[in-house]
Structures are given as structure tokens and as C-alpha cells.
Image (cartoon, rainbow, N blue to C red; front, side, top):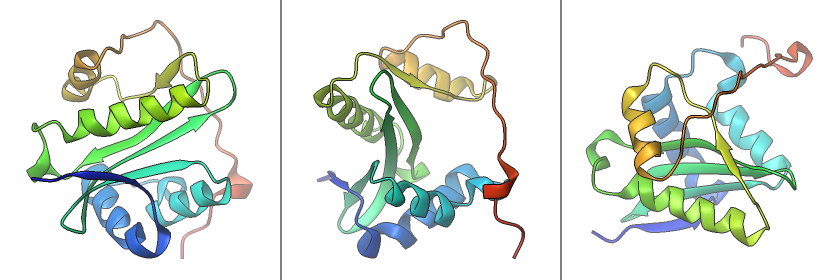
Length: 146
């Protein structure tokens, strides 16, 4: 199976990524609605990559870099393509891209109870760091229900 990792192309990939994220992540929160997230990511010209097999998007990964730390977001692979290295390929691609930008450290956040995801990242060289993740929702930027 030939897997290509390519930069996200809005016209070609948007609908596929929306479907993938809804099936993998669920996203009950409006601020995480896939169409909105994609639009915001494109707005800042940040990086979103897709794994493609025969023109079908089977995986995604987003990165961000603030000049100090890199971040990994939205690594997702369709269930039927898991456990064959696609997630690791996407992660390696993202790490290489961040490294080329000068990134010295990559961070990511996962839900503590997600043991499978934690094991995946540990297998790929990531370690749990003792930190407290804090957040604040900016309601003025969260769309209201349609």
C-alpha cells in the first residue's frame, strides 16, 4: 500500500478531513468543529498534513511552532488503517517539518485516560512531563449554535 503524506489542499482534502475528524474525535464542543478548525488553520498558514491512499484521506496531523516550542495536534488515522505505521509516519513527517523550522522541543496534549494514545506516543519517543495544562475559552471567538 502506497501512503503519501502531503500538505493539506483545501479544495481536495477539506471534506475528507472533516469526515475523518468527526469519526475519530467526535468533537462535541463547537470550538472544535472540524470545518472551523480547518478554516482557522488555513488563516494563519500553519501546517496541516494528510496521509492519502488512492486519493482517500486516511490520516491527518497538524503542527504549530511559536519560535520556541513546536506542537502536535489532531493526529488521527481511520480505524481500518491503524496499527500499520501510518500514525508514526505522520508523526515523523511533522517532527521533521518542525525540526527544519528550528524547533528544539515538541509538545502535545492528550487525555490522561487514553492509554492507547499514551502508549503510541511513548513508543515514538515522547515522555509524560509533570505539567498542569490550563486553558481559557475565548467565547467571543466561539461560534454560536447554527
